[in-house]
Image (cartoon, rainbow over all chains, first blue to last red; front, top):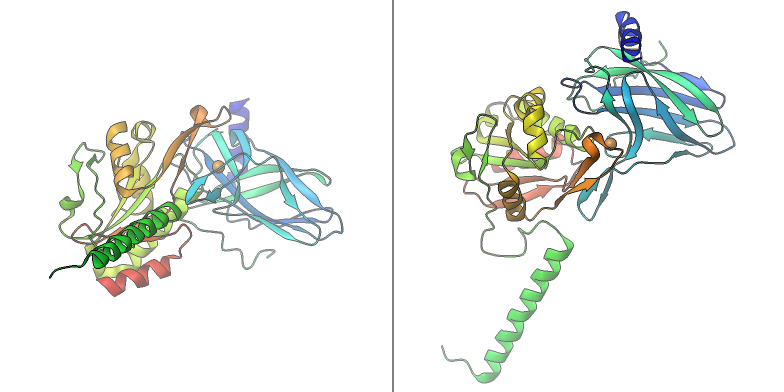
Amino acid sequence: MKALAFSAILTLTASASFACETVTLGDLTIQNAWSRATIGAGRPGVLYLEITNNGGTDDALVGIATPAAGMPMLHETVVSDGVASMPHAMAVPVPAGQTVALAPGGYHGMLMDLTAALKEGETFPVTLMFQAAGEVTVTVDVLSMRAEGPDCADAGQ
Amino acid sequence: MRLTGMQKALWAAAGIAVLAYATLLRDTDPSPGIVADAPFRPTFSLPDETGRLLSPSDFGGKHLLVFFGFTNCPDVCPTTLAEVAQVMDDLGPDAGNVQPLFISIDPERDRRLGLADFTAAFHPAIIGLAGDAAQTRAAADSFRIHFAREDDAAASDGYTMSHSPALYLIGPKGDWLRQFTYGTPASEILADLRSRL
Ligand SMILES: [Cu+2]
């Protein structure tokens, strides 16, 4: 299973340049999906992206799945009384008419048990599961370890 | 100078008030630099990856930028280290007067996974320090920062760490100068350092 998942990543990354992909699912638009490169596969990776709900009904991101990690989860970094921790988030609310970001210092996808090291310049797929809208797969750009966000100003080109 | 009984009582009351205020500040704000006139000199004695034991006095009078973290932390820690790296790049020739330090609060696992590779991926100037449990606790206590291991069956290796995510600035004589709270932009840290160097 792992070997199969790994070859799927390789296939996808063979043609990779920064995707800066925008994906829509019903009223939801997902963009700027990115991750940081890792050294080896022994440490967890991370997933950031933006979800815009253009509709009139609230939705929520309730799960993620990816061949890049054996145990992907939603987390939320919380800083309270000067102490940071990152508990599991059961769901990331995506209220009607709003944009919600999985971003550094807040909600993030925690990619534990990586299948392989995430290399800068590669991409990998992540399937997002929404409470109402269902599932959609997005392409995640792996940026450098020092990256603080994607340069997707020209997204959609 | 001779003090009347009344004056003595007033001075004693003032002293108690100052102490109470200091205690109050310490409880509400983890940055202790502001509470005392006497310099606060947090210290540590921790090995780098080669086993060399390092203390604040080993950095030749440089300013120290100290961050406590762990390398299994994919969100908060890389964000801060990326900012430190940006600051070091932007300091140009002044970078030689600043030593960034990453003190592991998860030292056993970080040594196993490799600390130097991790810090070097952000900036070659960053030195990673990982001691034993006692050295690590002593360093954190000295800086008056919090860290704790939190068992979590759903985390890698069954646990994760909570920790103070701020960045601490120590002066050339080892004096605590200030902290930068998590998320302080690199440009702000840079401007502050420039004003001191
Ligand atoms: Cu996390």
